[in-house]
Image (cartoon, rainbow, N blue to C red; front, side, top):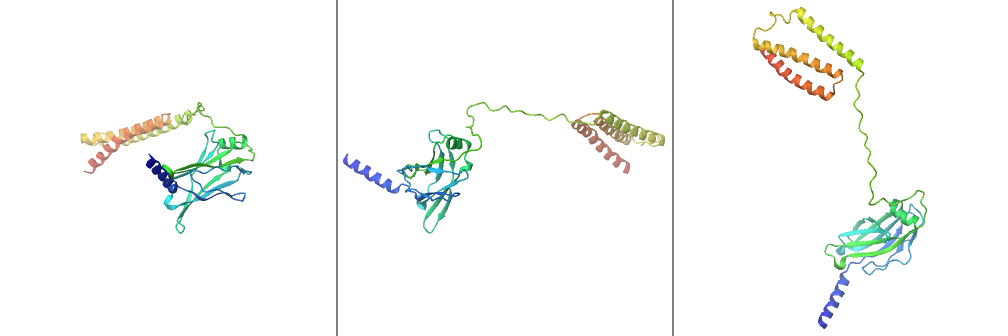
Length: 281
């Protein structure tokens, strides 16, 4: 039994020696250039500062700086700020610079006060509650190398111009109102009808000229039945395209027009190619 007590005492002594320690820690006031506040060596036994740090300007920026030996460099480092009893806090990540000559790693946590969330400003500036800064240094293995201590309190002694409020929690979200696009507009009916009549008149005039010129006479038509079918099919495809575009100007949608134009033009191109090949033989 006595041996176990000695072994436990020795183990605790070794872990206390190997425990992570933070050195040269201090809090600097970047904007107001106040005198930095020095902190004691940060370990698991660190005691929070007795007096809070008073922030008198909303545009103030404070910076927590400390050094850690490179062989004790933690895998995770974060600074939490917020009222402990409220359960509202913001987390900050550090800027780490390694000093190879001294074998140290310098950590800097920068907190711009004016960028605090409305919740923290509500508790700190309006309700005048203290915002506690807690340091978290952790490794995967855990144990004595992990540090989670409260460093200091912030007292916000400035006024807020705007009205602050806490975010709504566990409540229904505001109704989402979606405005659908209006129906696509087309030209006025009289213009579409006039244009359609013009296209129809041109098509009829072209057919009339072809008839007067004897294009469709038995002497002009190809004697080969297959070539004659190609000939009539090609002319029919042209007339079909005229009809499709006439329907578009009468109010048909562009998608329906493209679909009908594809059905008419695809066979027309094939028949036209075969007609040209047949006429060149």
